[in-house]
Picture (tube, rainbow, N blue to C red):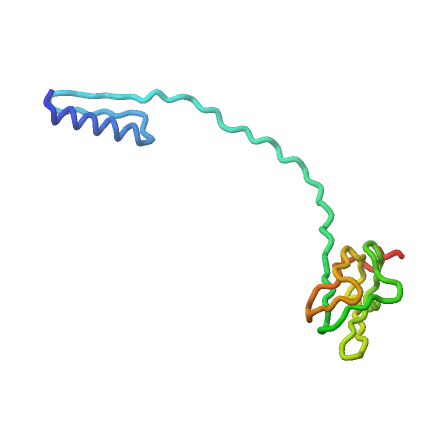
Length: 142
C-alpha cells in the first residue's frame, strides 16, 4: 500500500474516532476497509422521584428605620431593645437638631431585630437607626 493511501486511512480512522458514527466502510479499486466501533450499552440514568416539598414559610421582611435628618440620636424614655414590639406610627426615638426634638415613627408593625445607634451619637440623613422584622397586625403581641 502506498504512503498516500496509508495517510488517507489514518485520516478516515481519525474522523471515525471523533464522530458519533459506529461504523466506517471504504472501498477503492485496490482495497476495501471496514471498521466497526465497539458500542457499549449504556443504561439510561434513572431519575429519582422528586420528593414533595412543603412550602417553607416566607422569610421575614426586614424594614430599616432611617434618620429623617442630621442630628443627635435620643432614645425614647424607655429605650427600645432587640425583641421589643412596635406598632406602625409608634414613636421609636427622637433626633435632636437645632434645639428641636424630631420624632422618628415606626413605618410598620414589627419586632426590633437590631438597634444600630446609641444615645447621643450624631447621625446622618438616611442613616439606619433600627432594623425591624415586619409582622402582621394579628401577630403583634406585647
